[in-house]
Image (cartoon, rainbow, N blue to C red):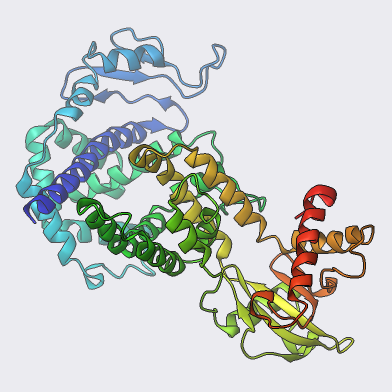
Length: 498
């Protein structure tokens, strides 16, 4: 518990120190902005601790040299690059003094403890009701709310004692911007911190374009775009990572116990069954991963290969109300307008979707409607992102003699392709037509597609009654297995589409 508290204290200490540094930089930025005149540019001298002045020439007025900003300082600085270099190297008597001191700021543990206590005690009722107020009253309300947080006042006092220039900058801001005149020092620090963080984030992301709105915008597996997507959704990533870690912890502890007691081989059969159950609990992506691993004898021991082969692609169905909503959104019509009958419960539920039996209003034919699970693309993308980040660590830790990242990418490509129901429909039609030129013509076919009821998330085919061969007691099972084998060989060796 002590180790836990120390780690959290260090974590919050870094946060507080970062906030303080952003605040100081923000104060300097706001001070510079307050000295900008729209008609004359940077004309008001900026004085810091009386140690010198920096006079800024008008913004963008002289573009002959290719520079949007030209700087003129009392110590004869001729360009922004020169000023930046001298500031960083401490060669000037201008803002370099406080810039260099940023790295020396320290916040004591007592202040950090106050931060943690204040954060834990805050409730929604502590926030002011500023709806409908004027801009000035909103500013005042925000200032009062910030000023009521004791730890911020203590932090501001400590900062001003370490860096007297902060007080000078606060005073100058109030002089130049009357709107800020009534705000307490702690509120100005917080506001400047937010302004600077936003500015720095914008600068760092310049040229990268806006973050993607979907992990796979083109509907194809794309780990680079997925990373950019989830980098802007850290809480979602952490939540899923913690969920996977929590559910997997029991299995990992059992493996660790087996390793310490040297019973890995002895208990492998039982652990393989437990792994299959765990993957089922973790959801669709991990079910697919388990099925893919069941043929990787180069990665898993034989007992685990056998255990994962029992992994069934059966998961709990999602509510029929959601399925009907997805169906109506995809078809653009209500269920009753398209179908005269629609089963109240799915006849089968798999990891990526579930199937309903219905009857078309147009011709009375019975059809099978496969409806994709809601948000399944994002869920798979998040899990594949986590697996891809975990893959290099797994390879080094367990000394795996395989390309773990490449393996994850192959899985991801296959999983995402399975979500394209239009491609699946096209493949089904191609399979049927290609079989017509083989000895299997008239024997093997894919259920005909109902095109008007098929979209990227809904696949509708004519209903076909059938029986699983592994559960059948008919005398022709052996013959049918032979036909199935010939079909697979034909697809692999002749048509090229599985």
